[in-house]
Image 1: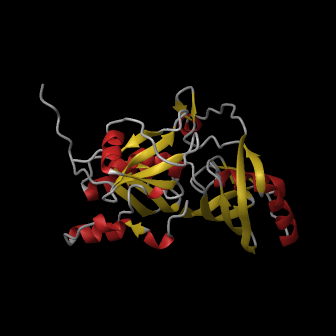
Image 2 (image 1 turned 90 degrees about the horizontal axis):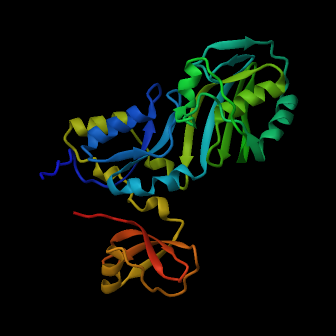
Image 3 (image 1 turned 90 degrees about the vertical axis):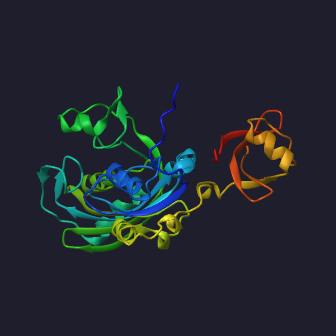
Length: 303
């Protein structure tokens, strides 16, 4: 039986896209996939169409490690307008309530204290979380609201950058699963005037350098000039750089790449390691099993 040939290159790596405003993360993903002529691509947690900033896009074998970035800490800069509440908690939604703004800086700073540290947050209906297999945002657009359980999140840093009239600007560093729109909506409720997001920018994901972000416009310009875009890619193992590394000799690497657990010194059960061969090629992610063996968890497939 004939095999269907993949359309696109077997290119692997991670692009730190500076996502433009007013397009979905999926559309940005498809545009990047097209520009790189990549056979496979995936993103690592959606940004709202309103939002800009760092959207890591995994190409090829890097998609096997996207969950590390999905579960990583992130940073944001957000502007909010007080006095107006919307159904989506941002400026793309319908206004549901307006109230006078009678808030001073001291009151605002006091209200912000309840949004720092380990807190619980009820996810917005305008999210990609699913209820009975349906994304919440699709139900929300139909006017349907369903119960959502509060989830534990951590706000490591919340700094008030600016407060003028009805505008608030904040910088937030937080754990995975944090909805900035919900923080702003809850803040507006705490202040008694309502609020919604007007601008949102993701400033970092994990430990990726912000200066490595590249705009869609630059990618398109370079592609039109017939320049290679591959130099913009971060290594496929870059989501794993917080893990210890293991370097295998030729024989051990052979067995590891064929799905076999191998012996390796100084291992702890449950520990995960990024694995290289003697040629310094990344060959996969390993996890130490109950027998203190280095077992393959994600293997890199090379041509």
